[in-house]
Length: 258
Image 1 (cartoon, rainbow, N blue to C red):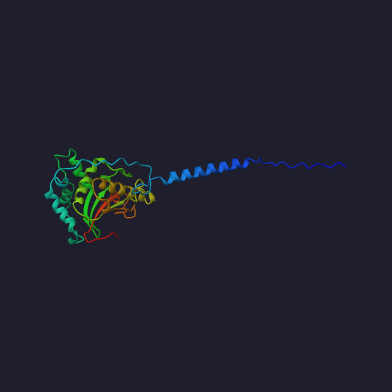
Image 2 (tube, helix red, strand yellow):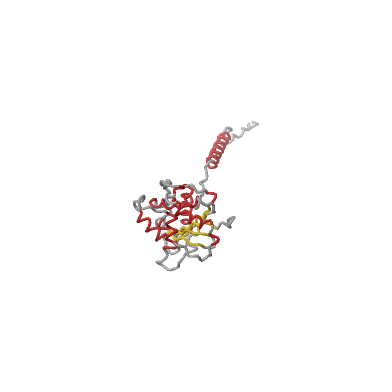
């Protein structure tokens, strides 16, 4: 009786196939580590707000300064304004401020040096207001003097006004807040959605960076964004004043942010 020889079973797997699997795993691990290193090497943007890629902020270039001490063309005209800022706590809350005199001292427009003097003077009278409330002295800007509707790109032809304001603010040491507001009645301004908040945040950021570019210390400033949550009017068609920037010069007695 013939005995059958047992033939060993051949493995369906190639003995070297584990090497292919191992090399694939090493490749994947190396790729993963390279990706992690590249991500962690990115630098965060300073003063970042909610991103909005629909607009690009052009590089900020400060316009030329004026003449005289701190760029003041008329230091004797500015002195009463600086005195007012430093001693504003002595004023009653409902004090009526002389707008024409304050705006002239704040922006110091000289018709001989400015070819577009009449336009700037008209826009300032129509779009800038100075008043006092519980926070301190407030310089309120209608957004139209600084930004086109629905945009946070500064109007370059009016950068001179921020330069003049920064020179006055550098002459005092009070804390400053840049507060942005939009119109909840306007779809272009974001309406009552988060788009209005993003727009107000980006506008405040741009103003703050512009003031810093003119030499103002960032440590003295903070940023506020309110969107359309605090409109000045609820009447349709009358909401132009809702979109605004308020630069608040806090009372000297306010020692810390609250």
